[in-house]
Image (cartoon, rainbow, N blue to C red):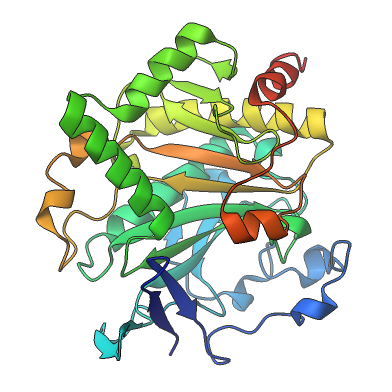
Length: 338
């Protein structure tokens, strides 16, 4: 079984995965510069006809979209067992309890998320929502992170479009910092931090990429990476799990537009897409004060991170990112994509 170890200096958890739960395809020093050899539909475990490669289906869409959710073959965390909280001197440790699932985004072996039809993208988002809601019934789990790696440089191991879900028994450090910032802002001003930022961005317009009745995409004021984008509901919403099917269809159309613009402007770059939503308010051991204002102070959002720049020593050592492209310029380029 994998396990989690806590770093008391950086205040972050690390998953240590054993050989039985996770085995990379190649050693870090052997990673190829280009994409791995594509086995094609005949050898792809996610293509129609190869369902035996993933016999256990946790969720399946209705209709022709054929979106499925299956357990990850080499899970970083597993649902069976006890948390086993323990101290190791000054350190803390947990058993590798959680979940690791793969969302297979339809039949098409080569289409990216942005190239799929709006109905299929909606089915993918429904899978995200429904699996998150189901896993939050397990009080051992504190957070569900949904993400997509597109392209080899972003961590994708297979060409067939897919996203992943990892449920953890801890709140990830990056999300915890956002939660604390949102809570502090609300306690001081009785307003949602993200709503305040959205009002300013919509007023200035300089960093807005796409805006419609329900969603807005912008390049953040302090973007870490060139062409980084965040997608927000325009109306305050704290829990992605409460999104309606109509909301998800609108988000699918909006997201397709955003990804199309990025692909056209940057030449189909590798990217990571991450969902930040509310943590599990029912998880055991959660400090109650963290959740008393959650519905008012938190605002779920997607982060899109194009992999057009390599992270180097300064960023790793300092936590300060060097971004050579101003977000105002990035937003302008993306807005002007026909």
